[in-house]
Length: 128
Image (cartoon, rainbow, N blue to C red; front, top):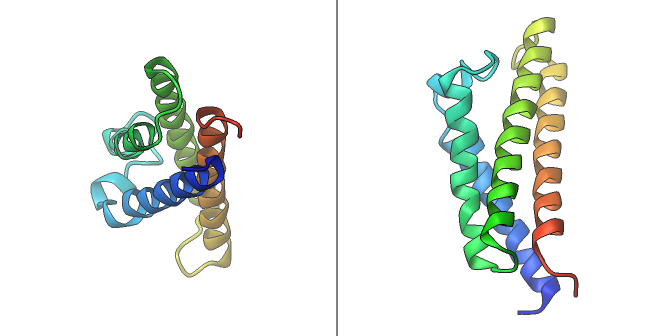
């Protein structure tokens, strides 16, 4: 597979897994705890993301196991903190689903997660 096609296939996979983890697998246990630092729900959510990211390293083998582990660890930390910070802002201002600001915060949250996947692939996939 050409490097460009591999990159596109990998980003499609990561965006699809993100939709599944962030929307379809999210439960009240998870979303009610993402704003409490260290709470099990937020940790479980970030862990779900890295478990679902793992196949990208198998489907598109390019780097070492150590690099994959490092990228998964970084994704866990970054994903957790993006979600936690969004919750801090939303709770601080009391924004609810009906508020435009809530949706702007959610949009920024999703954009930052997307940039995380671009960074992962930038590091993981060979330049070609």
